[in-house]
Length: 167
Image (cartoon, rainbow, N blue to C red):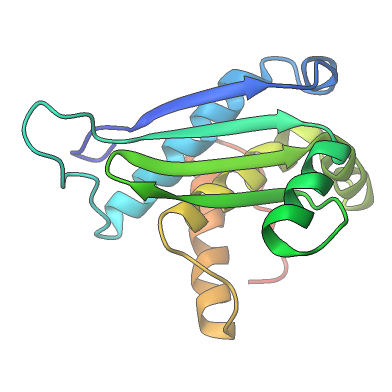
């Protein structure tokens, strides 16, 4: 990861329909998250805050269904509806956080944008991972910075830029 270790990236496929929608979804999600950490490292972000020999951090990616994400969204954000990706930054040393993705929403968005589900999955994993690293898109300047980072991450993955024509 550009001179620093990649965190442990655990992918949990809770909805087996992900395997049919995106062959090798687990591998793609892991590569997209690693590319996002590498992008943040190239921008000065460092995971190297642990003492020697300690883990450099871990994150979990949950590939699940709309119902599970709707429940999580209601519990944690007060919005009782599914969304494409949720990010939960870590609260303790070594735990970088978790992200959850809803297959139905991801499929519908990919279809609406005329993208492959795999490319949209990679983009949303990168997006969620950037949130774990402190990025946000509330202010216009922050949003633009995050979108540019996402475009560079997708280039690292040899996938289409989701912001082509926008940036």
